[in-house]
Image (cartoon, rainbow, N blue to C red; front, top):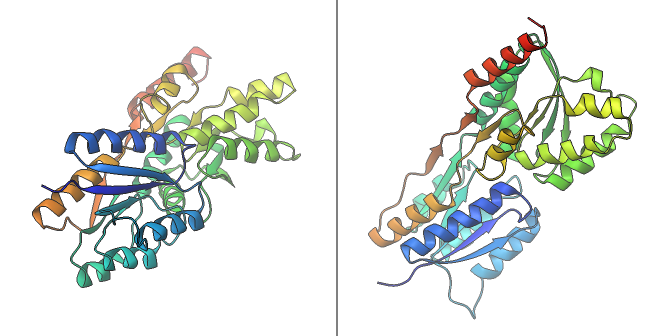
Length: 311
């Protein structure tokens, strides 16, 4: 049996979820006897497009049997996808819903499908976490992914659906990394409007950005303001065992959302498709869950309120 080779294109090597994606891909590929090449796009859609086109258009290196990629930009590269399909290369989109797969699946026989978390539902879970922590309302600082990211927009939409109407949201953008969130929050803290008494929670769309925000608050020179910021609940998303879940246990985060990695599942599905000649469903959704549960979060908030003499 021919040994399959896949390219796995991830957005950055500076994000805990993406690094876990790489670990999972290597583990499953080894188990299945599949060769993989992992590439990182430096959070740059142009870099990612150029990297993949170079592979697809190469006249010197054998084509891979499939490309599994998590898009950086907003378009998920339909032209690159068509070029891959035309070259006989399978194409798997991670964590993004894309319309162009319908047409490509009609016109090409290679496996073409997407595997994604339900980002609006992830946002709804985060909205429920906010409701559990702030039942009386208040204001939160939302550190959102980049404007061109569909996942960031969907998570924000879902959060708005389930957060209490009495909770106001102040948003800022970062780029899915600890460093970008640190920079964004540090710049915001220099404004006269950034006072701790106007906020009740720090909400980030991934754990690394929540950690970056915490580091920015830790550097505030005024001890009273610094302690006020750091006493607020911090929320994140991704919930990897060694990072997000560990941060919750250590008390750095009040809660996260466990978003399972999907590179391993993608490799399994693509391998089966190529070896059996079948095409998986166009889209497969993967669930997520609150950590801790919403019920436990509400219970802990209630216990903390009673301990401090609040109702």
